[in-house]
Every structure is written in structure tokens, then in C-alpha cells.
Image 1 (tube, helix red, strand yellow):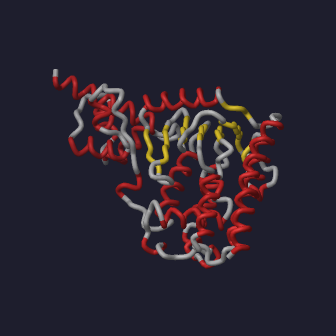
Image 2 (cartoon, helix red, strand yellow):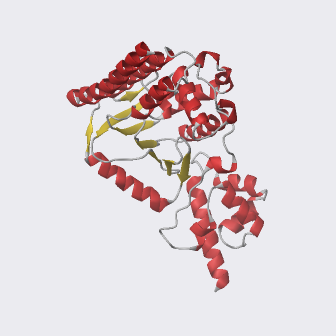
Image 3 (tube, helix red, strand yellow):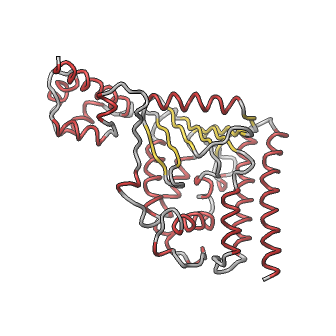
Length: 342
């Protein structure tokens, strides 16, 4: 009886692994490489004829991010998350950018993948369109969430930060990959509030080496908003320097009612995953199918209570972006007034 239970768990394990292997790869060949076994020996384990050793089980669970609790229990409320920054705490900007690059790169290789993104703050994928904003956002998190010693008691000046060149290429690749993936995004008019508050706080606290750089960041935010508005008009994703070279469907919704943290759901025939902001901008990941279904249903509810501002929905689109511009202009005038008094 106990042997039957072990075999049942093993078959369940290989079923979950099969769902995580891209369709263009042979699952048996992948397992041969992971376990360092011949095809015949792998087949015997996949069919349950040979029980996995403890070492083989641990290797497979670690490689494919599967917990033993997922396999051995039927408790639907037990959800496993993967937290990439727990084992590798962020020690520099690359420590955040490189794992994000790997996730986006892997997703871009999956055909027919769709991303649902509900957010209370502008996604980092848009900040990456601007070098000054990218450095500013990373700098703020280095001083706060990541508590990096090199950035404490230091003023911000994007012009003197040579760190950017250490991760400039991965950022370019993140953008190139991300803009090939179909997107549904859910925004509200407060999407820039956090960043605008950060800019304002840096001005008031004397954290800008040159306070006039605050206005540069504000103009960069305007430029990005204009770009996103143009993508929403066309219903397609494209990079600013690529003109009308459209790449993937883009659907933007104005979420007026449902408050949300930053939640990203990736769906495809090969692998599904949920990304949730945790001590922002860090994120946790789950591949749990029950949580995937719950999150998809939640997104359907959010969509029902949101207004599409894509393509022909001109008045609704103008309303959202006008509200965002009002917030930008208000902070800009406040900073101007403050600096005039200094």
C-alpha cells in the first residue's frame, strides 16, 4: 500500500514536470540531462517501474521548483512560492536586473504566451525606457528596500552613475523580449503617485545633487506616458525608437474600483505562473495550478469592472491620461514653488 502511494506521488511529479518543459524540447532528453541517466532508466522512472532515490527526487524538485508538500498532500490552501532574492539577497543593481532578465527571456521563448498585469505603480518595464528613471528607481530602492550601504548618505546624480553600463545590455534585452509578449494591463490614475512622491521627497530632503534633475525625471515620465498612450491607440506594443514596427497585442484597461498590489499572471500552453510584488520591487513566484486558476478568475472580475481604453475608446483613454498628467503637473508646480523659496 505504501509502495503504491510512493508510485502515485512519483507519477504526479513527472506530470507536473512535463507541464514545465517547453514543447520544442523532448521531456525524456531533458530528464536524462538533469538526472544523468540513460533514456531507458528515465523511462522506467517516468512510468513508475523504478522508484526515484532521495537524491533524484531532490534534484527534480529543485530543478523544476516543485515542493514535496505539493506532491504529498491534497490541501488546496497550501501554496508554494519561489522567492529568488531570499537565497541571493540583492547586493547591487545587477542583483535585481539579472533575475528579471532571465524570467522575461524564458517567457519570450514560449509561443502564445499572454501576460495579465494589474498594478498600482508603473511597471519597471516602462521605467527601463529611460536611463535616468531606471537609475532613479533603482537608487531609491537601494536606499530603502535593499538597504545597500554604498547608496546610504549619498545624493542622486544619474550623470555620474557608471553602474548603468554593467546592466545596460540586459535591460535592452528585457525590453526587446517583453515587447514581443501579448499584454493586458490594468491601471488607475494613481499609477505614477509613488514615483512622483519619491521625486518630491528627494527634492525636499536635498537628495538630488542637482535639484533641476527632478524636472528631467518628470519630463521622462511624460514621454513614457505619451508612448504608452500611443500603444493603447494602436492596441500594439512597440519600442519608442521603432516607430510603427508593432510586435504584440496590447490592451490597456482603466481600473477605477478594485485596489490591487502589483500582480502579474503569465499564461501559456506550456507553463503558467503568478508573480506578486513582495517588499516591492522584489517579487515572489508561484506555479501552483490552484492559485493560477484563482488569479485568472480574479483578473476576469477586475476586467468586468474596468474600462477598456484601447483603440477606439478615445474619450476613456484621454480621461485616464489627462488625470495622470494633472498629477504630474501638480507635483511639477509644487517643486518649482519649493525651489524658488530655497
